[in-house]
Image (cartoon, rainbow, N blue to C red; front, top):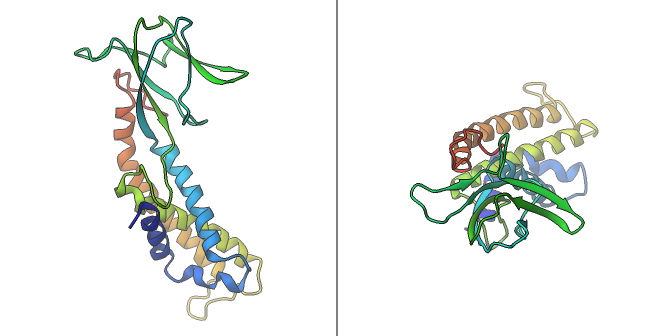
Length: 219
């Protein structure tokens, strides 16, 4: 299966039959709720563990460079390597008290300024969002379940709110908890699971995005 299909499956298993009764509360199909929740969970994941990309950039005389086309509001420059392929690598630092790389917003979009300006082609490393479509994905396959669980948690919040404002929010005859309470309990459990899983890999991402060993990470 594709990454998206795997996430949808994890979403389904996480909710089990909890979401099947939504149809009686609101005409919105559960698949619409699911897809919106997966989109939100995917955005959450991209902020926590972004994609790291490298690009070779030819120098220009002004020192001003346009950011890559897949740059987003959450993107950041990880490093500028110049000269290329030194041992050990040589970096121009994009953060800290005296950065060599500064961001600049202009009327035509975001750019970055390098001082001193490299005299030749340099290697730009930066973060951006992942890709997730029905046929393509840049996600680590080990994280598909994490996104599915977070999506289920987001959906649970909506289910809980809808039942709390519905005559269908009947008390369970066994434990005397309302459907809204059951969804809220499931939401908290799923968030805890997703957070536990993602935190184990955040440290490695922070290390990868700190090549100059400034110990600042990517956040």
